[in-house]
Length: 401
Image (cartoon, rainbow, N blue to C red; front, side):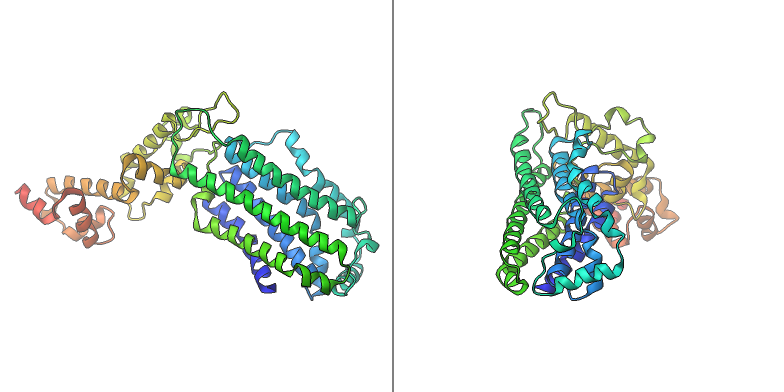
């Protein structure tokens, strides 16, 4: 179990970097999710060394990070709210969510500046059977017992808040909304996300109650090992869901910024992903304006003949246009009824037909033409040409003579 918790913590520390890389940092909602995952993993590391650690230096080091526990739940709340209401901006009142963290952090400041030897004494205490830290007053504002009670209340309040958000934004009222597969995926993910937070909250409560009842470390670990392992596995599951469903990483928020390609043609008037609704709990996806934005962006790539580049991929369109990749995938598959690859290959085939009509085969080989059109090989070109036209390049050339 020890190794499971340790690997879970390490995965959670690296996943936020992966999350931000895939979203290119444009989605503020993703930053909230990444922050939650990071601080949750940091807290897991703290608990891992507190419960199972044998290294005094590591125990002493992670004792300094306890205040960051109070950042987990607010970032989880901001993430879900940003997705559901299509607005990631924080109001002045929202900063009150960080009050518990600020109080806890300030309370730990004197402890931060204590000697390393003193911290090692505290760490040595956690290795013993009696691990009550109240005698050390590591936090001058929040005594140890009060901090434990406050941490439990904090997790419950935010767990309930997540379900309230799901209930409040349960059904958009605007009938013009397109209920897309990405929308359903994100909604289902948010339900799973809230459920996972709730499960972790319950297991956290079980651990804390047993911590209050049993001062003996071995008895505590014996009675709570199952709950700690289950919470660890649930957290692993949440990380795996995000990794295996990359559309979650792109989010579904309205505060996206168009990429540099938007400067070529004035897309500023059509750059809004979602029209503002008269009702605060209306979520509008793939409005006509947004569809026009996608079409204009694709038209720019087409005019550039960017498809002739062998490395032209959907991720390039997403990066330069600022349109999430899973939005583009939905646009091609569900609206145009064609995959991005077929759309790209069809443009390449049309370009090849123009070259054939110009008689370039008298000067260069079919292999060279396929490379000039962006195909990796002549065989790939022939397959794409036949799929698009129903005939091979050779037969097409014969029909021209």
